[in-house]
Length: 293
Image (cartoon, rainbow, N blue to C red):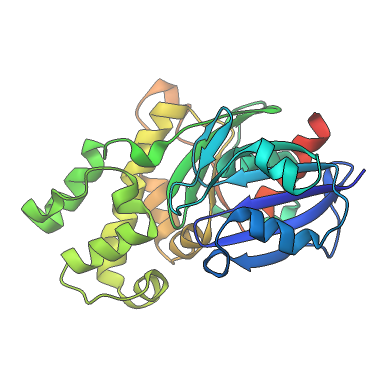
């Protein structure tokens, strides 16, 4: 049985073949979304007419019954449409952060790097925090993953106070979590602090004043999300922006200092944090999902 998995982000799409719940070695390919009018065109380019029986697609956006639309790209499609492209294949569509949540039990030791040391509670739920073109989270517990659209929630007051201390009234435009913690949000923060327009990665490596504020805000957000999601199994950062930000020399110290030390008998004070280094993690999660069906 031939299976294909896809991770469709706002900027790039990754695809691979899967067998027996794992990726087929050497089959992962990257595609620039700007080069294709629709995802169906990416799918056709990858498969090149090969027979496909099953497809699992992880998307950057909410998954609605019968139809999906990406949050950060004007692409929409449904399972029936994609199945027709593949000649009648069975199609499953899941959220991309949910896919990473499904992948957590299968990630190799070298696929994650420690950011904050701690002790994960056996059987505890784990929080996946995705930072890239957009922002979102998922909560993994055993073989189940709960969905969210955290990026569209209002900015927590603790985070806003960090911004207000540095920006004053100029903090007002940052109304949602994604407006600050996605790539465009980092660039907006840099401009608000008086910096010139530049790519996010350049800000991370070359604008320490901006990154000090950004990391402090991220630490405040993680503290709030600890109460929201109780991630006793740990927090896993995922995405290109996340890897760059939490890899900064002082990021781990700021995140560790923001953990909850004074409530619930210290239960939340030792939550470990990692960063997922494997770009194919969502694909691995899709492969695992196919094997569960």
